[in-house]
Length: 380
Image (cartoon, rainbow, N blue to C red):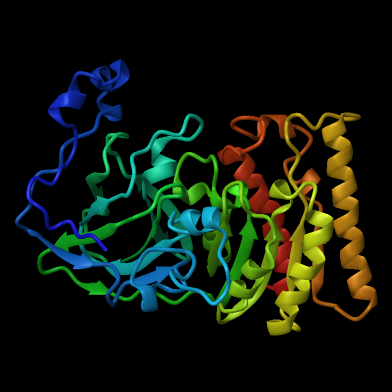
């Protein structure tokens, strides 16, 4: 674990990057990135220590790193999945404070640079404030996209009231170090507990991981977490949600699971029929009664009526729907199906960034469909 106590920490735009500042940032102050200078009135905390509550990193107490899978496992983690587990999708930091502002010091392992996803979603954090039981978006971190270290300030309120805060972690980058600064003489406390204890685990693909929404809070697991006021564990692995048996065994190690959602067809078009039944069988070894929800793939822009892509979508959907029905008939009454082909709506072609990965609109529609189904299953 790297720390940010380093000489020459870069806090904003470097002289080399100033010449490359886009025109809009030069002309529109609302789009500019302002340097955050040293503030002697700020005291710093390691977020891995109490009273902070870290969500989405099941093994952090043992491994001390921001990671979605264990560093060392009795089960084989595919190399690509192992690397993607270092990306912090679905991770949340929860706490309370009466500080009028909080400051983040962030160190990332790599620079941003995805062609179809903004740096704010790939490498940024966004902040929500809980008011009257409702989480309200406040702000997203601003930083030069080509940096691996940045500092960002969130102004919370002018008053000194205690605020419940949720900070969502980057979706397509890791976090080597995160320090939180609050004003001296401010109070730092543990967050209010979730309204619904226990965890919902989602296993899936890049769509689950959050590609390619504009900021972390728009990943559908994070949308669902704040709408349901419950903890989610995001196990979406971009291009590599393939239903390997070892991943089911690792999911079985997670404690306090109320629901498991399987949304990995997009990476297993040709193998879903041979993997999903055995995957569920392994989950049932540890979770004989835990509800399992299988969602078929969302509709890509290319899946027009009558196309080959549409036919494959329908065939795989029907297979999964039948698998659920057959398991129910043989006594597994806690397994459910959601038709992913319809969740984006009739204008599904307007809901992605690149024809495949959901925009904020697409991710929100997936969340809304899952929200209805989850409430039906868990009676939330």
